[in-house]
Image (cartoon, rainbow, N blue to C red; front, side, top):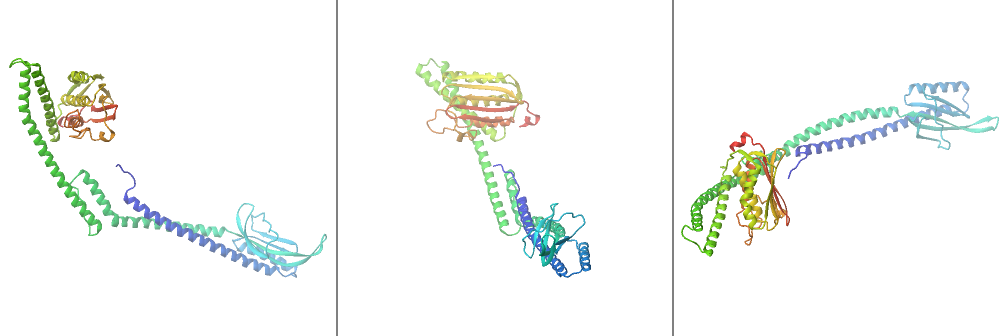
Length: 485
């Protein structure tokens, strides 16, 4: 199965780096929250101390006018000295005195009904947030034309900016980012070191397994004495066993091919004699035959022809397995080739009540005519064996620089579970003793070998009960390198 994705190396490194990032980010967020809370607490503490100081100065109801002027100068000094104070507001005896920072034109009023002292977050008209800290002053008696003498409650109020808090948080955030980056770099380094120590041998073993698929001499390196080294040793033992088995199979296959070739040649000599004498008898050289004798001798000759075809297939396959087959390239006329194949099977098809048709686009291709003819003969013969009614059609056309041949039938079809193995040697879909089509399962295997020898491809399309379509393609031009195949 084709597999694609991140390798084990990157999965391991990315996992460790992601863990390092999440860990450092979590600690950074927690640290920033604590720092923000501490800075705001300190700001609130400073605000309360300033409010208490101002409340003590403005609490005396008998302060003369000169002292009031001095207190107002004191407010201005506080604004100039403190970078956190946005404004100071004092209400005494029904009059409100406000000392704002330059540029601050409007100050939100203090809400009525608040506690005697406290703090809250607020927003200036421009949307900037601030900390509002206040404290009530003792009531004073004031006289107004409308209400006469009445008590008036006062307060001291200070607005503090969060600018310093945000500035320190931003500074701390930069430090945290730098530290996190350092942690990430260290994490990457540690991940690669750990990978080489822990998973490096696994990757080497995996590479050895992949290499072993194409080269049976490949072996896994054995390092150390841990479990991975033991696994590599076991893989090498398995590889040795597989290589030894492959050698045995190759030797057995060679012996089998030699035996088949020898037996084929040995059987052909007496078989030719049987066929020759049968033909002489049918020609009446040794005297006239009765109808029954002629029928028997024709059956002997037909069986001999069938046996000869089987032997020829065995010899062809043996040469293919031994790598002894070579291409003898020549200019091949598609129309002439298909017509020759049709003529060879036309009588047999008529005897079975089948139509053998062809539809050919005339073209020339460079190929081994004998082997290409054998491919078509095997496919048509196979179609005739498994088709009981209907037709068999041979098609040929040139498409995309390749000759495309098709042999279609209206036979019984091939079940999907058997389609993948029909081109394997000594394989037949119907292996029962009652099958009508006799053979040893080499016809389609030879087809596949001959087509691939030309650099082409072969495949089939089939549906049970509706017939089969065998396709194969041959490149129109075969290069010089293919002449030696």
